[in-house]
Image (cartoon, rainbow, N blue to C red; front, side):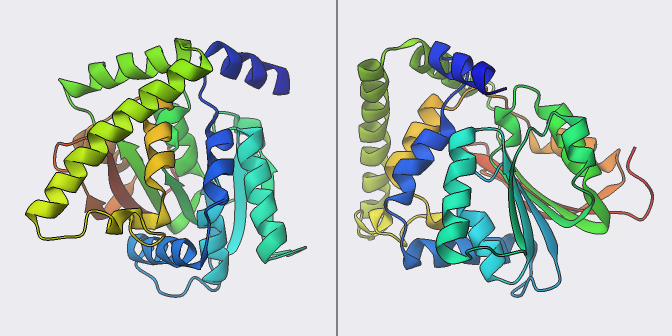
Length: 281
């Protein structure tokens, strides 16, 4: 598995998400952690996660596993990227050393044998992950199977745009095929363009354009630069419409409890589904 991962990242077939997250964690502070906690609370609709068994599927930096654990959940985190696993393990050791209520694993959401050993969860949380697996719909189906009856499936998936999605796909392919210096230039160019557009929008609304770059300025405690690198480089890459996701989950006896779309723009649509008592197909 490790050799395959290394081969894919070196050849540009897979983006090194975990390497990007390592840089992000160097900027982690209490403000970002509290922003992450607030986002989990808002998405799941609960201020206290005590008594909840939560799966952080594709834990990335480990920030949202940490947020869920601080909110009282018993957490299982896993990721396919070994660097992401190391990031999550590092946060666990820093904030909850030797904690039996937080388990960190390496595995793939496409590996049914691995998933069968995890059991069922009161909440499966997977924000911006399933569309990077190379098989989004199988990944979503497998994630749904891990939700206990009455439990929640909280996901965020890239929005499909008929015009821009092919352009974004071409940009990501170019990033993967470029040398290190070329990748930096692509990310920097995108950051300058996006940053200028956001600054103009903030000024038009009478806001301080620098505020979004503070530790508590971006939603979910994120970092503008690391978000840009993730967006430009993130491959594999798939998209979906809200209707496609709704129909897919409804066919598996899930009921929509929460929906926040990006209104046809680029970004992730957020969903929370509740699983009915009937078995998932």
